[in-house]
Image (cartoon, rainbow, N blue to C red):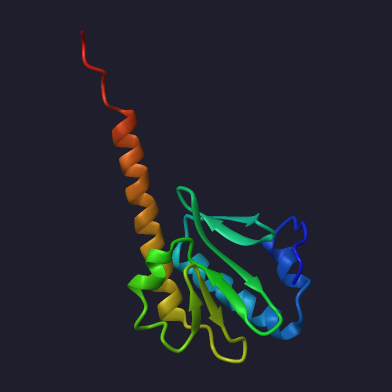
Length: 134
């Protein structure tokens, strides 16, 4: 799908084929359940979730759904569970003819949440240091 400007995830999903629309709705629900405090957005022309920064993205393509966990370390962490999927450094290709891998997506989203929480803690700790007196 070529990049377009969408105003919401609802609009993005509504413009997909019926087969992709069903899968995208299910994937979105899994992400929402795994990250109830995350904010929905459109980023880079695709549905995104933000939680203390970018969390995950997804997009419909001609033959697959792209799931982008935002960090190649997630792909590495779950490489054994991802063996049946086509992957790259930051992408998992999900076949729309198969069920959404609920447990796997949930685990990856929660892993990303922990990564973002750790980044936030580090930023907060660095920003709260009191400068030394001269």
